Length: 172
Image (cartoon, rainbow, N blue to C red; front, top):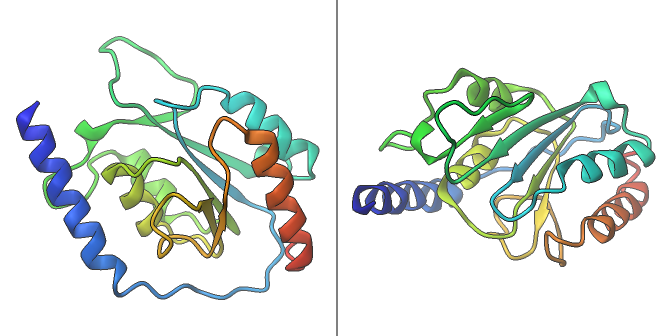
């Protein structure tokens, strides 16, 4: 427990240091491929969120999901990619191939669906090669190019605001 707190502290310090050098890519591409990073510790309605994205014109096969959980039970099986703080090393990298594949994917849009800062989530968002990153305003504003001021429980409000502004920005 204590070692996890120290590891989390060093990872957050690493993220904060690297955030001072962040340069966002500006892309005029239309949104086709979407990466969805969810903190399942506080938000468990991921299927409803995905359905909202599909209803707004994103195809199901173009949505890639990565879910964070504070703890994963030993024999638990998932039909989507899941990671926990144990998958993060002391220097702020990840051992799991699924996380590396997710961060290296060239998404047109990365939705960082978490409103509480946790080091593993911040690192995945920071390391992502996505063209356009969207998240909550309660998270460090240097991580995302666009922030929505709501909380994670109101996923319908989040998606409607997201697509309203994506249309204004000519991303759809």
